[in-house]
Amino acid sequence: MTEGSLGAATASAVATTDMWELRWTAPALPEVEHIWPEMPTEPSSSIEIEDQDIYLLTGSSRINLKLRRRSSALKLKRLDGRSVESFERWRTEFDVALPVGRAISVRALSLLRACGSVDALSVAPTTAEAVDIISTVLAPERIVETHKWRRIYRHGSCLVDDARFEVEGSAFRSIGVESANLRSLRTLVSELAAERLGSPCNYMQFLYHHA
Image (tube, rainbow, N blue to C red; front, side, top):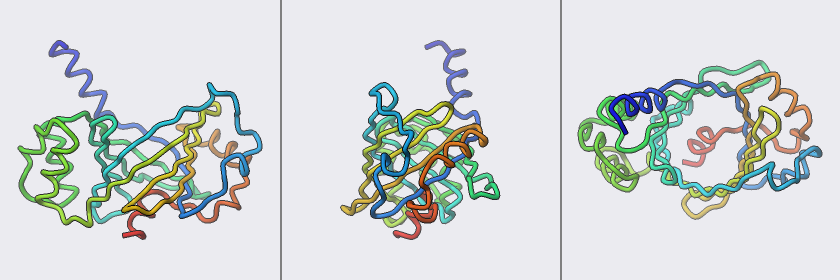
């Protein structure tokens, strides 16, 4: 990769993007086909993904900072607002492959209010090494590893994320809908039997409550 293409890739990774989301998370939820009569059933309409995400708790449920084992990356999303119907606008501020470099390392450790290890984290080549470094400056209860099994459905400009995940050996469910287009997301949610899902709860709200 040339210096120019490397710079372009880095700029793309740290470019901000906004996504409207609504998510429900609980120990148990109905199956998607029971709440979404129009759920697409053809194989090409969905994909299955296995993830291992390590959430780094900053003290604010409005900040989603995590290391991703599957993509070997550090990602930051921030809750930027809510609509009157409680749809949440999350802004991805960076999603950067390891090693993340000094600037991203400084931002991440500043959010965690953690001193030191900037240089070490900036050059960590793997998720495991990054976790080891962060573990030296962050209390264990602020590092939460999740193992997820996800099926993601595409419906027009929207995604429906049906996830099963484990935290410390306990199993949970999460169903989320997201789109860059709020009008499309409203239309999708109107097709769901959302009242059967209970009150919305995003991953960060759940993790802080669980902790």
